[in-house]
Image (cartoon, rainbow, N blue to C red; front, top):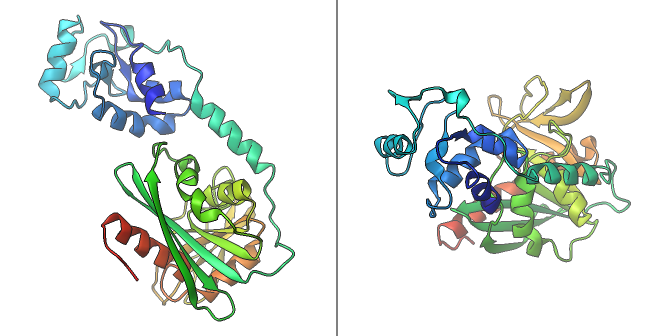
Length: 312
């Protein structure tokens, strides 16, 4: 996605400008706008990739690694008129005619194809293990942790950390494409008796297919999504140790669970091979703090790995 972004900006001709949103739409989704800004800040080939020609949506010149005045000076040399911080005749020189195959459209289509394989029912065999997964980042270097618990005893039985480069950037609603290649080594050998509890959403998602769903379908394992914020839907906040349904588009897509009378809830939804009821039952069994133990400990372990600490 980095190369695709740079290739698009390289198309903007001298004397023209484009916007972060225009480049994001050329990638296939306006949600990539913030990533486009990040890519421009990291651009190391200003001759081929004229990031100075990427401006704000309203024609404001916007930021630049070399400073605002330098960006204005470079644009003026190319014939762009600027008054204050605004480009004069912005719409007349705005470039949007990109030659693009819109790669994010292809990825969204892949998600929709995968969603057709989604199963919202329990596996034939009851779960014997719960494996919490979380990922931490140091720049584009990722640290993925999996902590496994025995369902009957509630005891931790194993913890594993892997690391590698995240080759796909963070773009909202495309997180699975960033994290799945990183967590893949953790998934080897899992079966239907292990439920993966993922730090993210399952079907409690505007598309009905959050990262916990995609992880479940890609690896064909039961999954539960546990998110710290409500992405969509409406809910009446729960009291201690109880759950409240989250309703979106007229159906229950998850539940809010809370510890303590004033505790902030987490939002639990099935990912794959799991029902809403079972997802709640499993999560409540491990809900000692705000976040259930499998993903809480995985979060601590991934963060410790990122910081170069051992956490046993």
